[in-house]
View (tube, rainbow, N blue to C red):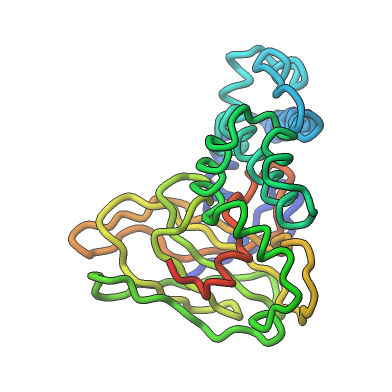
Length: 291
């Protein structure tokens, strides 16, 4: 049974705070005072701003990032990973790919131009990394961005989960949200602690509540959720920014088709220290969540 836990973390005022948010607060805090946790969060935000400023330039070195955080290099690595869940280098790589996704979807820039604008030395390397992380090739994402009609967004999509060949059975949980809204909610299982690449299994629902998805092959997975506004859309627009996001507190373990771990998600507004969502939600929606 879901419990309401009254805490206030990073400005999130509702009592319904997600378990991973509480876990991250615990990692940061521990025996440390609340003002120390706040100082660390502000230090990481300064570094993330520097990353954004340098996303199409030479990436900042670890020494530069530690200087921006006003921390020793060794201490900075630990603090940054505790706040964001990623190492600084991994965060920077994700930010570059998320920027490439935005440029390809929203602008008329050629794939080659985006590749070299963001500092990649090889078009082949860029294309393969982009496809793996975003879940769709750069050329196809451009075509999605330039479509003149999106019928699947004009009306809320029905709850949907795909059939995976050779997989029997489904599992599910509950998605909680701060309030009711006209949304499309994506729930996906990923093999990495960053929502990138094609999810191994996923579901789409149009309101908070129960969801179901097929049980994938045995392994350790990370459960993420993201919600976007389900608005009428008849012309190409930027890929919608998530209204809410969520991550499960613990890994999802699947052994012999048996799922263990918390499958519930508590959506919350994005935080400035959240890692970028690299996977393209629009591409998943266009495919009707076929994985």
